[in-house]
Image 1 (cartoon, rainbow, N blue to C red):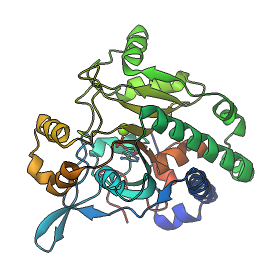
Image 2: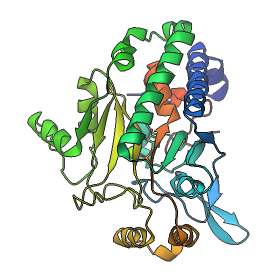
Image 3: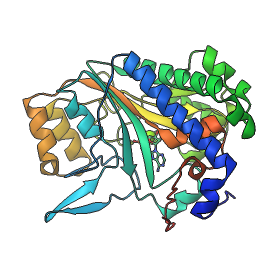
Image 4: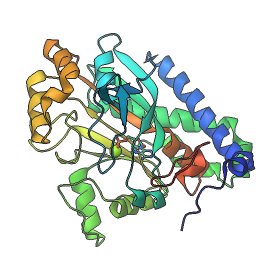
Length: 326
Ligand code: AMP
Ligand code: MG
């Protein structure tokens, strides 16, 4: 059983909270340094909009009354990231997201209602480009934490040796199909047509020595903006980055659909009315760049690097699904 958050005074004054938040600060410093050095421009992410990412499975969106119009808090800034490529070829946000996750996810140790993503997008890039940036970003950030914050890691009982493999070896890329077969061999009934379930993901994560990618998820498991493989209908040109030691998913990314007709068709397939996405589809109709990118969860990454039991320990003001808190 994962311990629930204590009251704000106790939480904020605990030495382990301070150590964890110092690690989070270093993650942001190192991520900005790496991405800026690679030619990415940081933009400020939108907080509300007429639509947001519909791809957040099981989570509800939060409505905002915008002068009589029903706007949404961003569940992810994906649509805006794609649009912003009209100004910059390589960009990133540190974007706040709000998702009303189902109350039962409060016990997973991995779900918050309010969290942040380091959101990266590359015009003209393919899936390999996005995976390369995600891998190098994680390596750079981890090296920064290990070299700058040895005392905080020690205070948390996190052995910096846990990251030796990550720092020195390339991350494996495992097709979803192979992950499903591996899990079935291990006796876990993983569906071939869905995301890896939490048990399956944890099993793969626990036996991994370093982070790894799972690629090529089946259509239906993801948002309409993940590009379908033109040579393999029903399979997406996407990936997840998964941490070892049972920490699980850190990031999701993909090549994007950017062609107007494909976007309309994909939105229809999910049962939504394309008219809802008017502003975005008008941009796509006049042309937005093809791209690839990913979103890396800041609190998930903090939890992994700090070696904390629960994700709420990586937030100053944790909001757990179904729990009313400040
Ligand atoms: P998604 O678009 O659902 O794949 O989310 C992108 C990334 O954001 C995930 O890989 C996680 O690192 C992070 N994330 C998603 N949902 C949550 C949540 N409820 N709490 C904390 N982090 C999350
Ligand atoms: Mg994901």
